Image 1 (cartoon, rainbow, N blue to C red):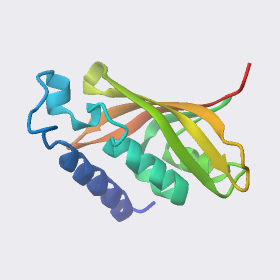
Image 2 (spheres, one colour):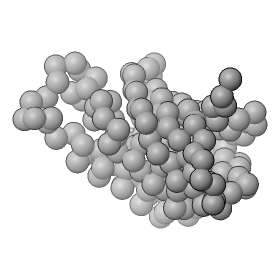
Image 3 (cartoon, rainbow, N blue to C red):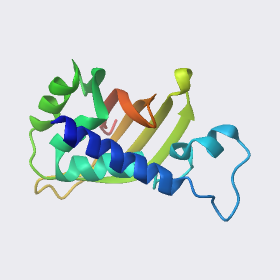
Image 4 (cartoon, one colour):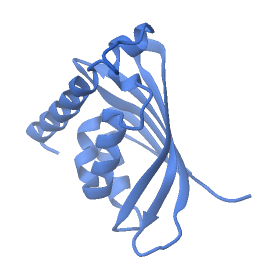
Length: 160
């Protein structure tokens, strides 16, 4: 991904973040994390979650701007580090078409002003009719006026 594409991704995410920082029902929450950090609003319409899965489903290469060279992805049992390795791993997944269906979204503040995001849901790949359940955990770190993904852990959930 070029520097200009990375800036475009960051700008889109920042714009979505600004849009989501508008008060809910005309009032801001009193919790300082919710008030100052729109990514923590209790909604599946989180700008980050929406952007990530829409981009994953349509253009996995477009996620490169969310990662840095020290970012790490664990996808099932394989871990990779760095933007190039992460984008390569996501691009090499054994399906062409994917559709994520978000069931739950939770976020908590973490150290260094970061945010932990946990998403659960189901995904349909290629021509499969039966969705597969998944969970995905992100550690977002602040950078300038936006965030990047420091850690990303993805796991399919199989029936017991």
